[in-house]
Image 1 (cartoon, rainbow, N blue to C red):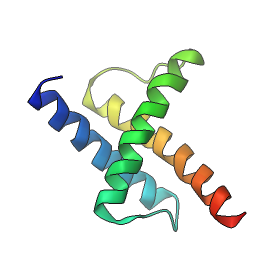
Image 2 (cartoon, helix red, strand yellow; image 1 turned 120 degrees about the vertical axis):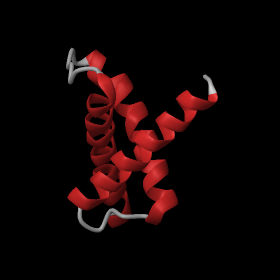
Image 3 (cartoon, rainbow, N blue to C red; image 1 turned 30 degrees about the vertical axis):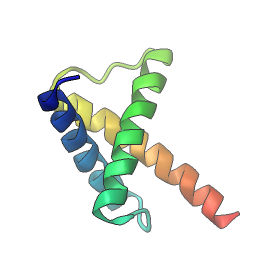
Image 4 (cartoon, rainbow, N blue to C red; image 1 turned 90 degrees about the horizontal axis):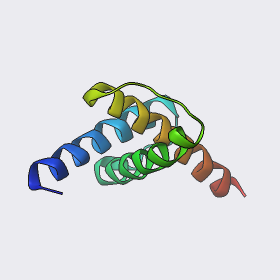
Length: 84
């Protein structure tokens, strides 16, 4: 992975993590936490969507939407563990 690809991946993760933290109240972990949640969310979506035969579309917008959905899933799981 080149430096540009890594930068885009981190930028998508940051946007997706921020978006997920806005949609899931109480899920924000700050800038670095949102980045981590977004990147992990992108990984979750990357494994989950093809297994379920879900296609959001290509391009940067599709990547952000998929990563945000994965990040929301992660935040809901983290919230469930935090309450337990």
